[in-house]
Length: 204
Image (cartoon, rainbow, N blue to C red; front, side, top):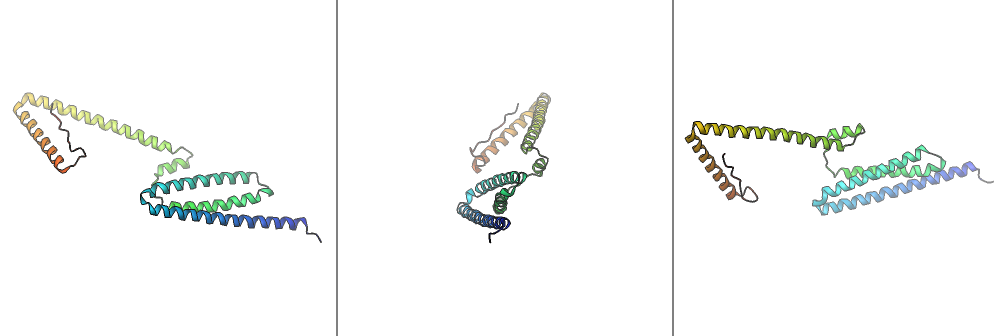
């Protein structure tokens, strides 16, 4: 008695699922071995720890995004023939997510919530960097304007005081000059600055 087509198809589907499961097991084993090897290399060279971990996480994220895209294409045009590729990609996705989680444990990166919110809104996270830079530039210009205003006020007061109290202003200039020279000498003796020099500002 010949086997029916349904039983043949069922055996074929069972074989496909078994093969996909075995392939996923091999993929999970290989990714685990790769993770262990990477961890051993990172432990041997602590200086390259952070950079290496970050590169591995980025590579894992890119690979997972590629798998998700493939799954989307497979599901959107699913047929009986697509069953085996679908199972293989699902198992590969599970293995990659497991690898990503293990790699992320050794990668300490602080991501601002503003960046996460921008990504959730479908916007480019580079906009956050641009906004931060623009805010820094604006605050720097504001601070520079205030500093220049105080310098102008100080210069004006010294000029007015010099006309009214020339002797006192001269004593003030001498005290400032001696104080600046003493600060320079102490900085040179303690090697506070890399070049051992301190700029002495002259009074105007």
